[in-house]
Structure formats: structure tokens, C-alpha cells
Length: 505
Image (cartoon, rainbow, N blue to C red; front, side):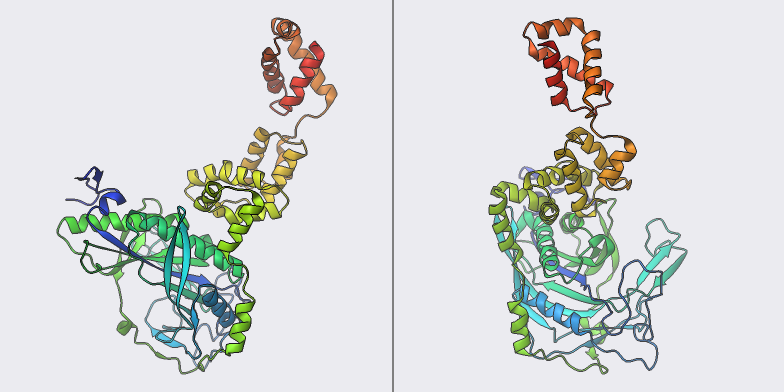
């Protein structure tokens, strides 16, 4: 049976996750890579700003030139310990770096300084809210390493190496401090496995942002997720897993798990077997394709890094860092739910849309919880869904939304005009005030101009005017519509209606 063909299984089809779990149990696991927001790289003094000209933020150390020696970044070690503490991990009293050996063009040294069998943080957990149910995701390890460079493949249709005519490498990213957070296998989630995966990455992103250790901008690659998925028949051992690499949005994390569940179920039902391999996720189709066979630890030939001393965090320092952790995201949400007077359903809507932090920032920028929710869960959520992106990836900031609502509150924009202004902001035309001015969208507040428009509407519709004089005020809607048309929708409908009744009373 070809992949994607549908068969009926007890009322559901095999092309749905419900159809998959009718015969298989999914097990998921996530490996999340997070670039730390330090000023300099992990083992040298090169800057880490995003967007610099290619290969301008490099030196002999991060390029691995002969004779160069690394020195560990204390700020990166501290940030990693704080992450481990926030994830309820045990912090190692002694650990060290290792060399992970493999050849790839974006690895200037042909090895990566990482941690292998002695990570900095181990055995933690993160509680995740999934549709009102708390799912505990175990954390296997949190370790520190250096990021690789970035390869750009040119000439192909997909942006990948297959079919490309040439490849370029930018080493600016090579050596940036990178934390890898690896979960334990997560069984027992059934048809909710894709949703649990997304909820976990969402909760992790919120936690990291609250710690202020990274900007966690998935669209820029500062947070990337590898998604592991396997299926097994009930009562059997866990199946062979695949690893979908570098998934770069919350929506795509969910889709990657779903895609692999459907693909693997089709292969197994057809009598085939799953190959342990890395796979690529395609945003445009939601499918995964084969990458390469998955290496094992032996393939990487790990050995202790000879140029770096071991790390032995002072227990007193660790306790000091623990005492300074910010409020946990889940506790913070419960507190803000009360402050904002929101129901559990309201909070779930914010979480499902990935809008909580955006709403919080919009309120902090000077608007009300009601207004912030209205924009992010309404017009902006619609736009994000249409574009197939996360809310945070839209080219609009909480400050923009707060400024837009202020223009409405000040009577300079109606809700309808504000939506038009928002379109301009999303199109990159400037701030709400700049878009309003450039498009000449401000509400007509000149009483003389409005009165003239009202008088013209009354004169053009004498029959309607007569009905209003006779007490049938519902007919005023016709005249309000005429005035709004005359003013290109820039009059306040309530004010227009009041003027009409006043003129005809």
C-alpha cells in the first residue's frame, strides 16, 4: 500500500493520528538546541551578533587554526546551570568537555567541542499543560557545546545540497555557545503526541525567555529542534526511531511528529521496517524525507578535550544561582490569570495560539488585557494562520499593537480603520501612527465636516429622514451608511448617528 493511502480502521482512517494509534503506540523525544545570548563566543572573544557580513566574526580559535587554544566562557557556563536548575536537574559537581569528531564543511576544526558522558546538568523534568492536563516530560541532560557554521546551498530548488550547483559557508555562527536540552523518551501520549511535542517546545521557549539566556527566535535559528519519533505495537518493545532535524517553528514541531507517525504506520502496515536515520522536514508540504543514516557515539570517536580544564561548579555558587531564578512560567501564568481576570478557557486559548508572552508584553506596553487579547487572538492570529507561521514570527511587535489600540482609545481610529492600519504595519510601512498619517486614515473629527456630510445624506434621502422624524430611529442606519461612504469610513459611526438624530429631532 503506498504511503498516504487510506484504510478504514474502526471508524477512523490510517491517514489520521487517531488511525495510527488504533494499531500503534507512539514514543517521542526532543533534542532542542539553544544559542545562548552571550556577548562573545564559547571559546574565544569573537562577537555573536546576528546578521553580520559573512565571515567577519571569526578568529584563529573559532576557525580552529593551528596553535590556537580555547578558553571557556564563564557566562555561558552560568547560563547553562541556570537552565538546568529551572528544569529541576541535578548539577554536576565535576564534568568536562569532549571532542566530537566528524567532517562537515560547516565545522572549521573538523571536530566540535561538546560534552559526552559527563554533561553539566542531568535528570530533570518540565511539566507541560496540554488541554488542561499536566504532562511531565523528563529531561535526560542539558549540556554545553559550540555551534557550527552555516551552509548556504545555491542553485537547487529546495535550498538543500541535493541539486545545488555550489555551496557557501559562513563561519560567523561557528563557536557560539549552544545548549542542547535532551528529553527522555515520552511514551503514553497516544494521538496527542504531536500536540504534546509542540506544547513542550512552547513551554521550554517560555522558560528560556524568562531566564533571559537566549532570544529563542526560531525563525533566526537561535532555537532549533530535532524531533525523534517511533512507533511500536501495543505490548512490544519501542520501535526504531527517526530524527527529524532542525525543525524551526512550533507549528512545524507538531507537523513533523504527525508526519512521521503517518509515514511510519504506513510502512509498518505494508510489512516494511523503519530505518534509523535523520530526516528533513519540508514546510511547504508538511512531509519528511530521508537524510542520512544515524551515527552512533562510536562513530563520533569522542575523547576528552585536551585543551580545556574540567568544570567543577562551586556548590555555593550553584545555590546562589538557584536562589536568583525568576518566577517559573507556570506559576507566573496562574498569577497573571487572576490579575487579568481570565477563565481557564481564555488561558488555554492564549497557550494554544502561542500568544501568552505577546499579550503580556502588549499589556506592559500600555494597553488592557482585553485589547491585547482581541488583537493577538483575532486579526493577528488569522494572519499567522493564513501565512502558516507562528504569531511571534509576524512583523509586528507588542509595542505596535499597544500603540494601535491607543489610537483607537483616543478616537483617532475606528476598529475598522485600525485593521487597515495594521495591514500597513504588517507590510512594513512603519508604526501605526506613521501608517495612519501616510494613508490618511485618521477619523474625521471636524464637527463642521461631519455636519455637512450628515446634511447632505438627509437631503439625498428625504423618505428616510421623514421616518426618523416620525420616531422610527432604526432607519438612521441608512443615513449612517451614506455618511460613512462619503467619509471613506473615517467617521465615527456612533457620532454620526447622534448627529443625525440631533438634526432630525
